[in-house]
Length: 341
Image 1 (spheres, helix red, strand yellow):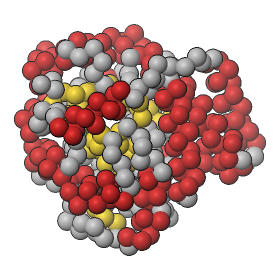
Image 2: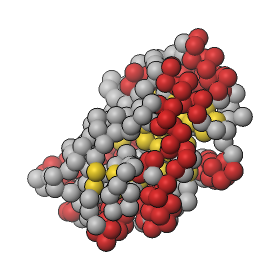
Image 3: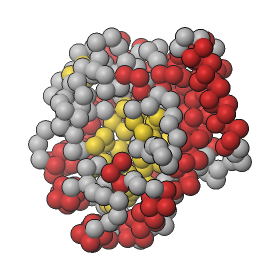
Image 4: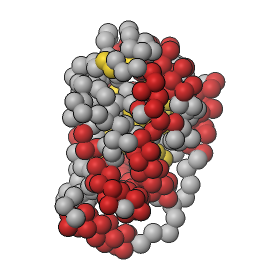
C-alpha cells in the first residue's frame, strides 16, 4: 500500500539501501534537489528508476524550481529564470506585463521539467512579506499586496498547468511575516486575526482551488500559540480548511527543518495527527527516511481522495514554441531593466 510521504534521496542515483527502502515502504512520491542533478540524461534516468522501484509509473516527482535563488536545475544544462519579485515589479508598470512574464517563465520551467519526467513543481508562492520579515522569502515573493500576489500566482499556475506540471501552493497559510528562517528555527507571528485575514490569508483564499499546498512551519499565536501551522489541528481545520477554504492535498513543508521540535518520528506523527495529508522529507538521510516511513500511515480515506483529485487534474501539455517564449520573456526582463526595475 502506498504510504503518505514524499522522500528525497542522497545522490544522483539510488543506492542499494535506498532502492530496498523505496520498494518496501512505497512512498507516494519523491523530491529532487541540486545534489540529485548532474545532467538531463542522468535526471531523466533517475526519475524513471524511482518510479520503477516504487512500482508506480506515474508516481509524483517534485522539485522546487521557482527561478531566482530557488532553482534546483541551472546552468550549464538549464537556463536561469527570474525571481518572483521581477514579475511584481513588471506588474507595477503594467499588470498585463507582469502576468505575461510570470506565465511565460512558468511555462518554460514546465517544459524543462516535463522533458525530465518531473511532474510537480513546488510553486507558486502566495506569501505576502512585510517589513522586518526574514529574508528567506524576500525576492521570491510577487509583491506585498494580496490581490497582486494572488493574480501573479494564478498566472504562474496557468503556465505550469499548460506544460503538464502540477502546482503546489506555498507556504499556507502564509510565511510572509516570519522573522526567522524556518530551516533554522521556529518563528512566531503575533498579528491579530483581522489583519491576517485581510492580508496573509487573502492571497491564499483566492488560490484555494489549487490541487496541492505546502504548509508553513510558522506559529500564529492568535490561533494556536503552542504549535506551528504544520502540526496545529486548530490552524489546519479553522484557517487552512476553514477561512482559506483549501480542500486539496495538504503536504507538510520539510519535516527535517529545525523549526519543528522533537524527533523525526515525533514530528511525523504530530503533523499527520494535526491533519496534514502528506509528509515531506527532503534531506535524503536514510535513517530519518526510515523514521518517517514507520510513522506514516497508508494513503487512505480523504487523503487518498484528495491525492486522486490532484493527480487527475494534470493535463497533457499544450503546443508550445519554446524559442519564441524565451525571447518574449527576455524582452520583458529587458524592459523591466530599462524602466529601472
